[in-house]
Every structure is written in C-alpha cells, then in structure tokens.
Image (cartoon, rainbow, N blue to C red; front, side, top):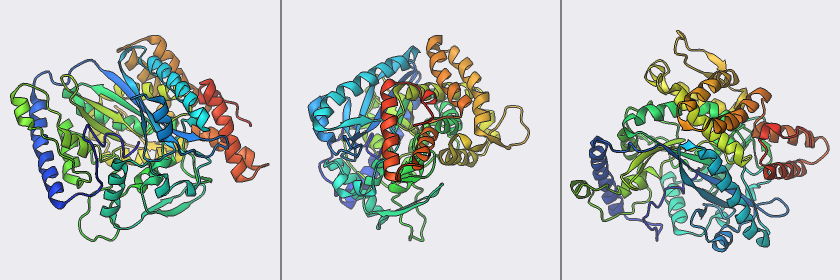
Length: 502
C-alpha cells in the first residue's frame, strides 16, 4: 500500500532535501509530461494490447516470539531476487509477482509463484530468526516497534518522510474508533508501515479506461469487506480494515492549522467519477504539491515526434507520491499501456485467498462495466466513497448504498446481500473472458464460501482472540491467535474453512 511503491520510477534518490527552484522545475516538467501524455492517448491503437494482471504482496517479518524482526535488508541481501524489495519499515518486505496474461489460469500461476517465493525467502530468513507473515496489521505489533529506529535506512524513505513532515509542520495525529479507540501522535511516517497489502495491477483498454476505472471504484467496497483482514492495532480491536484509517492518517501531510485553501489528503478514494485517464494524472498534478522533485533529461515531445514511447518519468513519479485507493498507472514498457492499481486489499490470510480477492474484483468490475455510464449517473460519487469507509469499518456487517439498473430510488442495503447478487454476475462476466472455467469456479467458490459463512480474515481473527480473552491476558491472546493464524496460513486453506475455536 505503501508510499514507497512507484516512488523512484527509475530515478535514483540520493538526498532528502531539495531547493525551491528544484520544485518549480519539476512541476513545470510534470505539466510538459501531461501535454505529451494527452498526445500519446490520442494515438490510434495506444494501450490496446492483451489484458494482463500483476500483483505485489507485502509481508511482516516476525521472530520466534511472534514479535517484529527488523531484518529486511539482511534477508534481501541473502535472497538476491530482484522481485523482492525492502519496505519503509525494517520489519517489512514486498514481493513483486510476474505479470500474467489474463487468460487460462493467471491467478493459479500467481498463486504458485507466491507460494514458492514465500518458501524460498523463509529459508533465508530462518537462520536470522525470521519468518514472513502476510497479514493486514500484525496483531502483536506494539507502538514501541514504530518510530525513527524502525525506518529502513535508504535515502528514498528519508526523503519521503522529510517531505511529508515538512509540509505538515507538526506530528501526524491518528484517531481510530471501533469497539475500542486509538488516539496517538507520530513524529514520522513509520506508523504507515504497520499496513501491509495485496496490490493488484490490471491492464485494461486505454480507450475505455475511465469506464473500467469507475467500475473498479464502484465494486471496491464490496471486495474490501469480503477481503478484510486487519481488525486490530496495538492490542485494540478497531475496524475490520483498520489499515484504511491508519494509512490515511499516518501520512496526512496537510497542516490542520492552515486557514487558507489546502490540498486534499494524499491518501484518498477519488475526486469524482473519472471522465478520462488523462484527468486522473492531471488532477494529481493540480491538487498535490510535489514532494520528491527528481528530474530526468527526457524531452517527451521530441520522443513522440520520433514515433517512440516517452518515459514521462516526472509525471509517473508525482503520481507515485499520491496514494488513491485505486490508482491509474502509465507504463512506458514496450508500446506503453495503462493499468489500474487496486490498492485497498490487505495481505493474507493465504495465497489462495488473495488470488480469490483478485479474480473477484475483476469479475465484479466486468459485471457492471456495460452499465457504468448509467450507474455513475444515478449514484453521486460521494456515496461510493461513503460505501468504501463503511466497508472498511464494519466489514461484511456494513450497509451500503447500491444502485440497481432498474431501481428508481437509492437505498441502504446489507453489503452481504449486494455481494450475493453480484457474485453470479461476476462469474458470468468472467466466463466471457479467456480465463479457464476451472479457475473461475475454484476462486469464486472461495468468495461464495465467505459470503455463506459470513467469515473473513478479520472476523476469524476477532472471533478467536475474543475466545482466548476468556483465559489469557490480551497480550497472550493476540499472540496465540497469531500462532494459529500462521499455522493455518501455511496450509493455504481458504480462511472461511479455518476452525472457529482455538
């Protein structure tokens, strides 16, 4: 989920302080890139290749006591895999999975690659008293585990933290309600590293990008609720997806005391239904001040004049320092393409659960795609944003406002009822693609299992922990629950099939 993904875009960060002049030159170059991007989007056939998927999975590293183990650089140095990268905090790693053409069994291939990567990395982590855990927020994390000492010692993270703190001018304030309440302050961005996610990339047709993007925006709250796996922070039971609140507040660079106009938070759901791909990049440039003004030597107009595909490094870098929950990505690789980065889903519980979430969000988006112009005209955007935060807070117990093709009036509906209605439509939409029916049946069967049992990773964690509270201290209960979680996770059995009692 991190403010580190996409931050470098091939440009090397070697310092953490920049001059006003550097910021001005960078902003001007972003505007030039946007002009070039508009030209590129107008070219016939741009971004019309085969659909594909890719994914990134973030992990915690724990020791034998199931506390965080700050050894990410040691593990990365030992593994020597370019697809494995260190994260903002020293107890986090990220694995970047290989892109897969969206045909046959793309998620089965992704699942097998992920399982073998975890096994291989754990072989290197074990001698260092470390083990990977894919989970939204580690239940045994303590506030003392965060702070300056927790940050991975790399210039890009220092630059990022320094820029966000400088803009804010005071500590980050974090307030999250729920069954319990957390109220705290942080002097750096390391609280953000408490969040680990499964980020899905979906390459879609450039000329219909806005429709695809809006379809994903519409269905994300339902997928998020069914995927929820982050019900606690620092020993407090909070939202089903506590990450959503924590991430937004832990890097909110806005000063709360400025009386003048201020930009929206850099972590956001959207500013309205999208009308074009260009608009999503242009809005980032106009709404958010740059924070890392690294420059390339490219003249994008000259590159286009030569009939080549420009890098647009400044535009991409700026886009990479804003963190909408669904983000538009321009990739200049090959002939260039656009994709949607779906950023709100948590890591875990298992590889197969994450793959089921990935196929479901694509299937659900395809199910509503052809009705998107109508659905977005009858549902004001702020209701979808409202649905997203409801889903994050209440998970599968949420009520959301959902538009129907033939519905006259909008109304609150149980999220599970909407999911139950959407699932067969997602199945039918996927059958019209080149994905194997066996993959659709297997993975959407997992989503169906969660709907029918009303069991998600968040609900399982909460249920087991509350059971353990009867005989153990809170600290011991969270640790015992995590031990059970890790044992189940290793079997790759879907979470809705896990035993309900410790």
